[in-house]
Length: 558
Image (cartoon, rainbow, N blue to C red; front, side):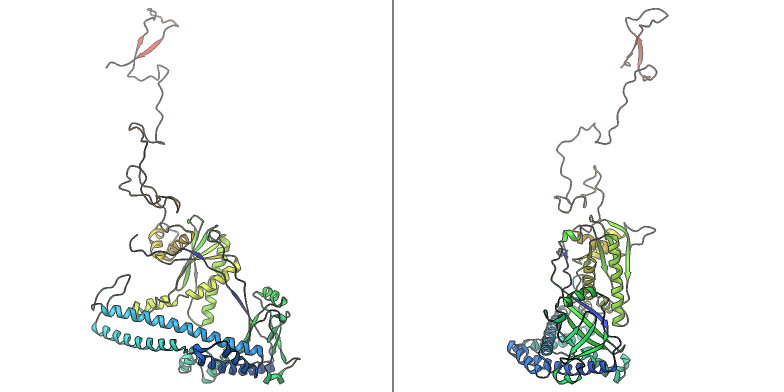
């Protein structure tokens, strides 16, 4: 098929490698909150200082400089706290490094697109494959200025990349920029300052296998008692032995609580983090741990009992159930969500939609969920789509990465496999081959519902094209070849019928249409009128016919 790019094969997405659960620290006393704030401020200052040192080392950082940083921090904290802080600084620098590389690639894509569009004659039309030229000389001039700006920014970014210089903000760049727009954010300066300082605190500790309850710095017992190993300068705040402070509040993880209890009973590593939500005025404890890598189930097993094809959209998930042969079963389902408002509201909406999807998938008995392997990182640049602002907002609003991560994690708990497929042409071919045939007076099929069928069929290994009837036996040339009548691996499944070697006689009707001819009648009453009955030569010559009289038909004269 000319003009269609090669499609990637479907694959089963690997399950989550880590788990995180959270619970609120209720009934904290004023002394507990004061100790937590003091410890967080002290360790946050150490973390900021260590991150500055790590960024200054750049590409020259190695095991020796890491050990030196850890020794300096051990003097004012402890060896375990120093290890947690230095590891967090290394991870933050590495994340900034990856973000810098992604930023450089984004600038290069924009520069490439601008150069191409500027090289075209003004007013030249575009195609589906590439954007057209700019419509006026004024727009061409403004885009040439933007090209110069992107090139200068690209030069500076590449220079920083080569020297290993990154820009990191402890507390978040977004919150830092909010300081200049307090009225727009609806915050007072005191509220912003409180949030900024709490985000820069450091109250976290990595787990250690073999240690008591999996963590020595922040320890949580099976009955939910939380205690913290205080740094050396704050040891006078301890209320229990060995320089530890035990909180009055207890925790009980309602989600994955049994799994967490099994880990701490076996003294396996669990990482803890304590943080303050300044908006609600609540303290939370987050526990996380790694899961052993589990080999993904084979693709044949994932599609054994059919799949649920899911089309991802900006405000809903369109899902359709397909059996193992690729046939739609039942009615289409739609799971809506609203991605406006606060971050917590968007997360709750997405989580609720996925929960309803997984529950319905379990009810249908499907073994897998098919989704598109979407990545819009290179599709939302303003240089490619130009003045299509609403379209850029649309594709930017689809939570592709977050949706896939949440779906994989939640589906693993339900025993469902996630099959990722190539997203090319699913909406177009689904609407072409499935939307109209499945539309009835009682069923309204949308283009998104048809795309869900196309995604599911691709995950099952079937072509998206709907099965059609074979051509008439006497019109094979006019009706063209058969379409999708055989299995996907059958030879000549899309070709014309092979020539027949043994033809039936012309006067013999085709097999299955032949009708049985009536037999000759055995009585005079049922004989055809065209026959003439004559007397047998041995017949008696009287008026009365004896019992030996017999009649035989004589053929009509010719």
